[in-house]
Image (cartoon, rainbow, N blue to C red; front, side, top):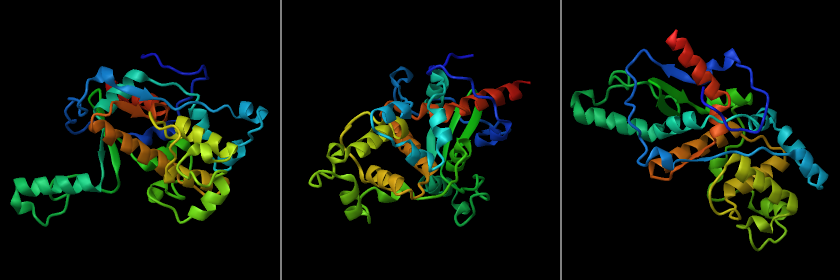
Length: 284
């Protein structure tokens, strides 16, 4: 079995109830194993989520653990101590694509263009799978895998509900409250360093453990500002939506030749174990 990279930790036991978080389709012909990404596999960089040491932060006078745990995210922070399977992550990522409503409509148009008699027909009548929600699809070792937002919620044992951060990409109805609550220097609302110390630390945790990115460590988006604001106001945040949207954005960016993979722990702490378990079942 492939070696993993992680901080030493007890191996998670396989929860058979979670086998449904990854859908395997072996009964039909799998998609081509040719990589979707237009760069060499060896160029892919894994942007790993980092563990958070709340005890050390508390010793240094920054006591913020309760704000995360009050949202019921204990499972996610345990996941950050889990293993990574670099080869599985890489193989999965190189053949990953996001299938959203736009992609589904484009596929319908291509079907009609090839066969005009299909115009006005349903997706099923066109021979296509019914579109219900955005999916991340990939092929690994001859098996087709599908990951959805609901799968992530189930993996993390959280509710798939709450404030959706992608709704706050450009501005916020909470502008004045965010400025007054979060920022010490209210003239620099786009800079993380302008916030009060505890909020700066929360932002650092977001960048290293929730939404890892490779640039602009001091630039804070409206999504980040709203996330921090809702966190401290104890307003329910849809973490499954946040993580799934970030994954989808990273895959789309990779399709445009940005060679880095986000959330390897999230996808493969339990998911990699489930993949291997499923593969073994199909080999028996």
